[in-house]
Length: 266
Image (tube, rainbow, N blue to C red):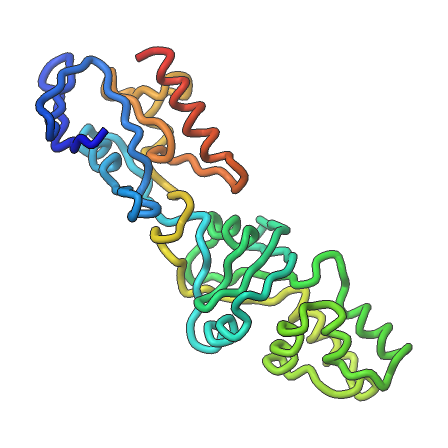
């Protein structure tokens, strides 16, 4: 603890580690430095540099399990809705998570967004179902038959938090009595609530990311011992490796399990 590692080399069958408290010599070296997520805790990319130094492939890292950010009108809208939360289905291509969604001043957060951020690809849209398990078009058509004088926005308010219903009624121009709405208008409303397409401009980055995607290529390591195939005695464990789990403790479990695997042989 409280020791800076300045350089690592392997001049012979042992590693030579230069530290702020003097040199160390060892036959086994375990790298458990994590990724650059949450830099205020001291996280860096040192482990990647070390892997590259010894000729191991590193999958380019990026922030994961992280809020998504937007620009222009979408950012302004999210800012007005900051603090509103609801259960939602959030999808990217074939991957979907149904968990909480939270509007923030810069974009979207909450478990469903953090989960999908590990799959999202820059420049492409995510799909948000604000009323999972409900066919909004069917609800609106039924309401038009049963309460034709009711305002469309009122029905939205029965499906969504009031602030969100009011905001989307403005953004999507969903106003007026149900009796005056055509099938086309109701179908558009259903699409917008069940399959809302949003294209993030980025993420909150490593500052708030819970984990790092990418890292030391798993192909370079033994799945039984975590030892580097090219460098006997060199082990990589935990988040520095290209293994990323979902929310719920899976990343902690990977760190402990990979550490245990290496600890049996070093």
